[in-house]
Each structure stands twice: as C-alpha cells, then as structure tokens.
Image 1 (cartoon, rainbow, N blue to C red):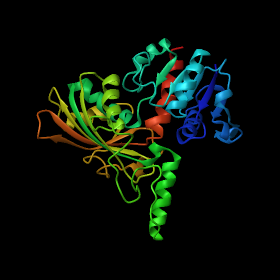
Image 2: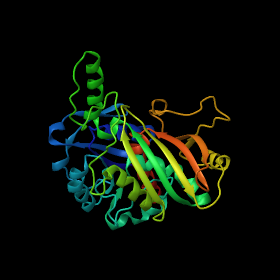
Image 3: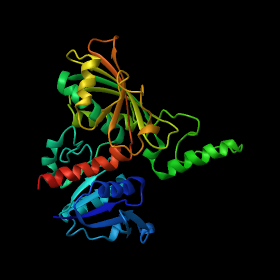
Length: 336
C-alpha cells in the first residue's frame, strides 16, 4: 500500500532533504505533494527522477492526505499543521512550535519509539531540535546502562541550521573579506565568517538562549525528566554539520571501554575508536550526507565520579531534521 504524502516547506533546505530521503529509503508513496508559500507556487522541486511543482500551502485541501512532513517555520506550522491534522492527516512537524505540547509526542526513533502511540491526541508528532536529536541518540545507550545524572554540552552548530539565507551570508562574507569588503551581518547579530557567535536564537530572562533551553527541556521530555542538562550553544562558520562536546555524569560506574562497546552495538551511532581506526576523531566536514551520529574522542572524566567525555557530530539537515522525520513516518506506518 502506498501513502499520499505532503511536504510543507518543500523549497527549504529541510524540505528538499526530506524529498531526497523519502526517495533514497523507498518510502511507500503513491503521491507526493510539494507545498510552499504563495511566492513559490509553480517552482519545481525534485523527487527521485521527477520534478514536482509546488502548490500553495495556504490554499491546499489536506483531505485524503495520509502524512504531512512539515518544516515551513514555526508560525506557519502553528497555523497549518492543525488544519492538516483536523483533515485526517498525521503531521510530523519539524518546527519548534509543538515540541513541548504535552499532547504531542517528541520522538527520536532510536530513543523513544514507544511514544508514537500518543500521537492520536492531536494527530501531530514533533521532530526535536537538531542539536538535541544527535545528543540523545548518543546518550541513550549510556542512560540505559548506567543512568545519567547530569549532562554538560557545548555545541558548535553550522549555519545551515538557520536556513539558506544564513548559508549565503557565510559564503558572501567569506568571499567579501578576501576583496576587502566589510561584512554586513543580516541573518546573524555579528559577523559569522572567520568568527564564532555564542548566541543561537533569542536570549531569555535568565541569560540562557532559547536554543540552550530547547536542549534542556527536550532532553528531559525524550529521555528522562530527572536528567540535569547544562547547554552552551555556539554558531560556527561551517556550512553543514553540528558538533558537540559532551560531558556526562552517571549514577553507576561505566568505563570508556564499556561505553565504546555500547555505541558499537547501538543502531544510529558510528563509533570512531582510536584503538581500531585510522581516524582519531571525526569532523562535520567528513560526515555530510551521512545518516548516523558519529562519536569519537571518548575518555573518562577524572574530575567527577562516573564521568565520561565524548565528541559527537551529525549532519543536521539529515539526522538533525529530515531523516529523523522520515524515520518517524516509517515508525508510523509500521504500526498501521
């Protein structure tokens, strides 16, 4: 049986990646519909060997659609995801709008697949934040084995997380600096080329940015509400791929060697082990287009009891967004 699938936000970075991954994974579709804003109506996007013309999201009738994979931006999704859900479609939403709604499950298939049963309350499933996804995939086997008490994470996030305009800004600023042009920040508050910016999203009253807050609350919702999380999120001049340095404090003893074996055995993680590989560690440039979360630089933290440090990288457009959404869709149809 094939499904009727609509892609909301089809012309964006994530929307195009969703179309690509649906084709790569042979998702059982009878009909794929590309939806975008009115200014993109008629624009073509690729699905396998076919080009699909975009239709107007605001005017589209969702009746008869089985699944909507939605990434048009939070305010747009807030308006149209409930419309699609009311029409009978199951919406897998990649924006931040529904993530902390108690009636909407927040799912990473390798971590909490059982939560998909809760989607019937609103017919909406939330896709977590990109930086949260890769971290909880890496944390899951450690938590199951030795129970995590506290996580301290510093992220190094690529500009593709802010969309195409941010990627263009990095490219244009970098090119311009070589010909003595002064960078003019538009997407970001400060120059991104040859720089790092310790701010992702807006600042909150306690000095935390909203991106940091997302990592805290989403980890609790997905993995375990008792885990304490301290996150510091930084934008770096990288086009694709998020990196994280993660420090974990566990309730029970777990050696670096034991942690490595857990990751070797866990679906969705590729361990790069200095003892068995030519590579000592993996960088975001090396994992563009890959599906797994890559873990390396695993070592014990001698400053706390039962502590571990590791480095993880992931393609934020794939596992951090589009792939995770498609995997949720695969979970959904498996249960039907």
